[in-house]
Image (cartoon, rainbow, N blue to C red; front, side):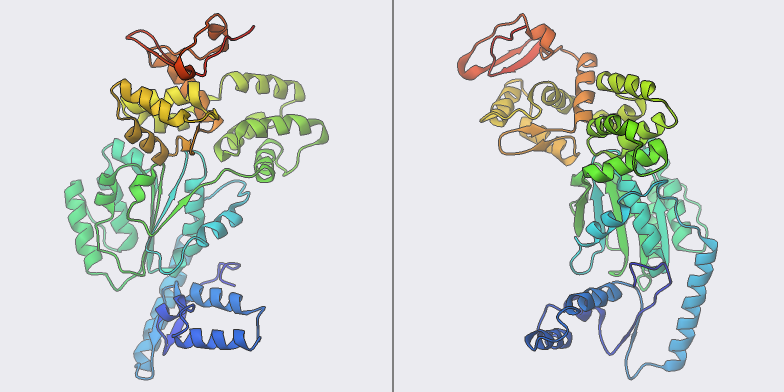
Length: 455
């Protein structure tokens, strides 16, 4: 019921602690004993899991703990005040605009919430730019905000930090959580105010979303350590999973599966979930090109809305050579955050190593980079943390859009690399183990298992 309705919900825990409901699997607790008894007797087997999940969900919502000794008059007064507060907040606050076409969003929320076991205080969502992190965070915020005394959604923290506006976000956070306005003169002043206000409100439960964090300084400024109650929830979105070392759960965004990707693309391109028959093959080609990245599916779908088949065909040929500017700009944010060594290694992978399945390729590539005086293992780990590459036992992989970004950057960030077929066609290089390093001030190339390239 909690997941299917947007109604306000306040649980009452009568002679039971919320933690007992979160740990029903502990057979020593009174609820654990009861569930074990039912299971051993074969009773309600089709309902037990559903009941367990319902109790755990209720325990994760801010409510009231009652006992035989509770003062009923004071309790009723507190409940009425709380209900009036929630109703007033519901009237005054509108839900965040999440997505024009929320394709697969309910499944995404369910997948995210299945990651949490026990009490979650800090939840991290990380992934490639344009993968839907902010969309998921907005949906979670809308669904959960009524469960807390107050809530705050801080958007584009990375951009505010770059524009030296962190104190504005601190002011917004204080205004959202507390009725009294605060003038923040500096980031250090804001940290002091947050510590003071949150420290005096440990009995309250807050929901805070910090969207697009890319540096520890931002967390330090907006989330003073140890100042929130254990029943509060902080959701952090980031492109860099190393930011989430202290999170209780870390959720990585996944690419949309083929059916969901097609539905999202068609929703933007045709305003319906399925394509007209005449466009089916073109749709399949565009969906294949987008590789399950929501950003690309939305931008290209909206760009093609209302266009004829001839225009679609022209655009398909064009995007195979040059990606749309909007997509590249969003992806380039992560590239711009790399240091010089990381940029060169990223470009090397995009041009030379992406999805190459060869024994010991990874170790040989790292050896070559080390010979160039770079800290290769550290750089590769940073690229992984920022969701720019995936590394398996033998190979490197990256999204096709990132590969194209890397190859575009190769032309802008010298020295040039030998990787294009029309250049390699005239080159015949052979070396020990088929692995040669050529690197000078004006020329750079790594040839793996080189062979003569026929025309």
